[in-house]
Length: 428
Image 1 (cartoon, one colour):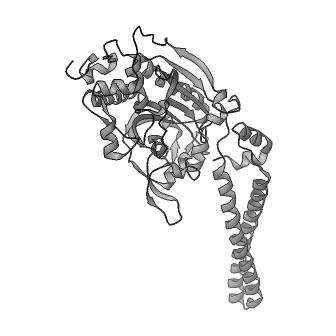
Image 2: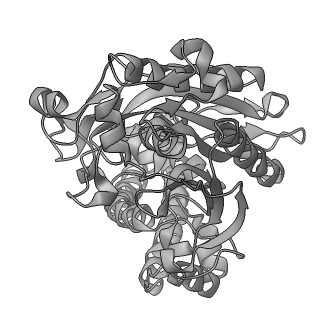
Image 3: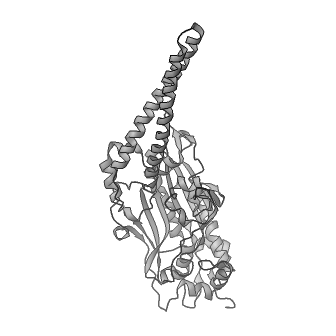
């Protein structure tokens, strides 16, 4: 949620920042509501004080034989006015909050305007693999090696689902083990969150109310909002760990990582870019998360980018890092870098990690604060990074590490869990 004071103090800056996302909004409506809200709140406080004063005078007059009725009439008039004002104040406050809830985060000043066409590649690692044979795509490789059963996955759950089996299940699990091992080495605390979350969790993360139709709802509230839903990413759970809490400054940064399946209603088409496990309703992901002081969040962001890159590099994959333009950055985030691996069959890169800084946007929605040494509480900054999503990594591993005989070389860090250096077709 945006800071109302920031809109009030420099609405033109806010308007221009939102325009970089392609969001064009007239802030005069909010400013009018905000002025009425603050004026009414001040007046209601004054009326409550006056009513309290009159109550004391009524009690005093009753003891001393004074004109009690006149004072009671004054107190009644004040009470009537206060009730009317508080009713209106509630309406204005609700409308004001709805307006704020609908606004995305402000992109950082150095984030360029526009959509994904304006994303900028900041660096690449390694070289694109070159094959002296006719390379296969990840779907044919996974099927031929008996790693993934797409048909039975669809039979069990419908389109957009699959079954890992045999060495495929071991390869998938080895990726998760590798990520867990690396994050623990770096001092991140391991969390296994619930897969069922409440509306407040989605609201704090910035996904609700606008994107409520993109999650799997398992309990609808009487107000039409999803009372409970399946988590679309463990970021949604992690950001809520300290909702409505004030953390001691000495405990920051708080560094967490979580494993969970991710459940998404959105799904791709039958295009080549959506085949296999590239886009589905359920996939596995390890997520990193930090709660930091505002002055530390830039460094934390760089740390998370470095960690995500190191994981991809350790798997021997060619990848690049792209800085996203404002319109391609998630609405709750101020800046995002994507780590993208090369997929030969598509002749393009696919994102395997988004590393984002929300600044204080999520913290304001979830009332997540810290108390500095001077004693005055302030909002923390929240950051997240995929560390990593496996459903896109596995296709890249298969395609980039394939050999002429149809086998695939297992990345060295995974071999102790897979139990093999090379994946071969059953019976080969």
